[in-house]
Structure formats: C-alpha cells, structure tokens
Image (cartoon, rainbow, N blue to C red; front, side, top):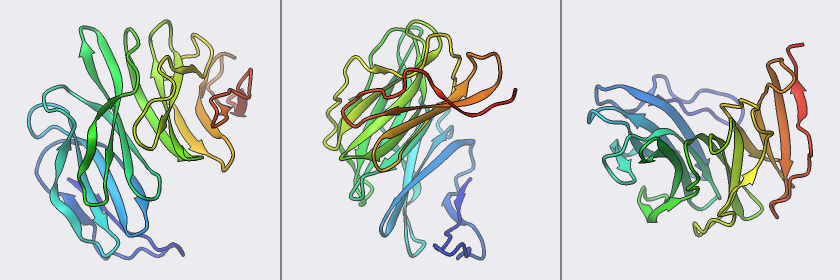
Length: 232
C-alpha cells in the first residue's frame, strides 16, 4: 500500500491513522511527494499490472485523496523507474526513467495539474546513448532543473533545465560531475539563487558527499565538487 500522514507547520501529526493513497494489494516502490497550497501530488512505482508503472494521486489539504487508488502516468507498457516530483506553485512536474530501446534508458517528464490531469504530452528530457536513470528534480528561478545518473560515457551525472511549459533548454545536457565518479544517486535543490546538486563523491577513494552549484543560466560554478561530508 501507499499511505500518508499530514503534518502541520509546527510539527504536529494531524492524522490518527495513515491515509490510504492506494490500497490495492501489490508491490509499491519509491514514493515521492511535492506540495503546493491546498494540494500534494504523490507518485510511486506500482507493479499491480505485472510491469513497473508510474502511478500518482492527489492529496488535498483536508485529507481527501483524488482519485482513490491512483492513475497511471505516461504511456503504458514500458517498465518505468524511480519517479520524482517538484512543483512551481501552480502545477507539478513528474520525472522518471524508462527503456527507450535495446540496452538504453532515458529520462522523461510530464506536467500535472492540481485536478490530477496530465498537461500536454510526455517530455523527452534526454536521449543520450546507453542508460540515464535515478533522476531528481527541483524548481527555482522560473524553471525546473533535472539531474540524473548517466552512462553515456562513464559513470557520472548530467542535468538539464526545463521551462515551465515543458521545453527542454539543454538538449545536449550539462555534465555535472567528473567522469568515473560513480555517483549512482543524485539529489537537486534550489537555494534561492542557484541549483545545488548533491551526490556520492568517490573520486577521493572515500564515500564522501559532494555538491556542485549551477546558475539558472546553466553555468556550473564549481570546477571541482565541494565535499559536504567525508568518511575519511
């Protein structure tokens, strides 16, 4: 099942028991959530149909789930992986990966309204060779920034800016981390000025956490990652 609890700004849990977002008996994986005033969009991977579908549902601030049980996002058929979601304050942007051919995997996205409806077609964010997966998305400066783990050459991370209307601004993608950095999971946030990408930083031989900053204009500010935490 997928369940949720509402928490007030002061940290008080508002629900005596969890809210059932999807009570259909099946394997559910990787739930993620983003919110705007009055609504939260919850996404997850669902194996109910014998494949990995991205499902989503809207949770209103009064605890009502719309629609009950969730609905599938994007084309049905291809196995999808690790959805993530962000909001611009008026709508939501969901990002995931799925196969795009033999031994390839690409990053896709879709806009969603607060009514729970997909807005426009599915957006191809990257179409590089080999596999691109494990994505993260954040909103800031009037755009989304999507980062992901990339196998086009070696194991490192790339990203791309996406306008609110779904237009991808960086068709060739921006290289974020050094080749061979083995950063198999990235997270992106917006600090009010720049986008910040966090990732496992292994170039030193230690399991560190590194970060790189990127301007809304697509300029990488840090020639070398800043080590946030080190196991050394």
